[in-house]
Length: 288
Ligand SMILES: NC(=O)c1ccc[n+]([C@@H]2O[C@H](COP(=O)([O-])OP(=O)(O)OC[C@H]3O[C@@H](n4cnc5c(N)ncnc54)[C@H](O)[C@@H]3O)[C@@H](O)[C@H]2O)c1
Image (cartoon, rainbow, N blue to C red; front, side, top):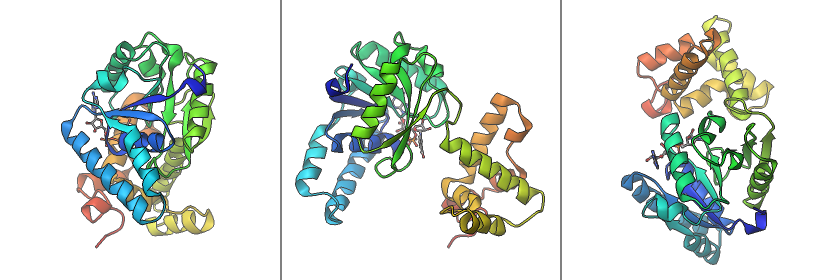
């Protein structure tokens, strides 16, 4: 398929990421059908859409016509068949559970037209793990957005050994036409680039803290003022959640068996104490 033939996009999963990916795509002129298995999430995504669009208009970022046009191009589908049957591109943004994702890919493969490209927004799983749930592995790849997907400038496109050069070229151009700068990974690796860089920094930060080399405040200060990061690693973990940090590391350690992937002491202790970060008022820092 040529990029100019790509008109209709299906997004599966209307959570934090899926709803933003859907609106960003509609805002850039594509017909989008969004579907989620949970009716509550569909309702929540509709509410979010109305609020988000209203705030864009009131801040003067979008004109009313622009907002109406984006809204009219984004359809909330009643089921997966309605969402996917005319899609040229399907973007999967369901929960980070491999078995669930594989089932979604098998369904998309059955329902989408044969020309359609199927992409996963997974933060960690490479598309090889889902491509073999379909009969079109050459048309499967990673298209990884960052949160918030309406705002963040880049997406990662990961080429698997099964992915055709045409599929990669299509996704790179789709990213550009939807306002993103694509970053291409020519080979698969878990976590891709940005998250791996983040993992490396936070692993080292925890090593320094657990080894008693410096306090977490001093380590954040070094990252923020010496390296120019907008937020130090501990402030960032507090924001994204110590529970998530612990669970991701536990899952990675289970997969790799490597000692360095084990949750570090400073995270494990806070996780066990229920100090999850901002959301519980206490993590590394204390919040009002
Ligand atoms: N949260 C982030 O910062 C972030 C960033 C980049 C990528 N991601 C990835 O995006 C994906 C979604 O993450 P999220 O943060 O939006 O999660 P979320 O929990 O907000 O949304 C996941 C949605 O998937 C739906 N779902 C579950 N099973 C389904 C199924 N079988 N069919 C259809 N819908 C189903 C759920 O109802 C839920 O609405 C994950 O793979 C995650 O790794 C997340």
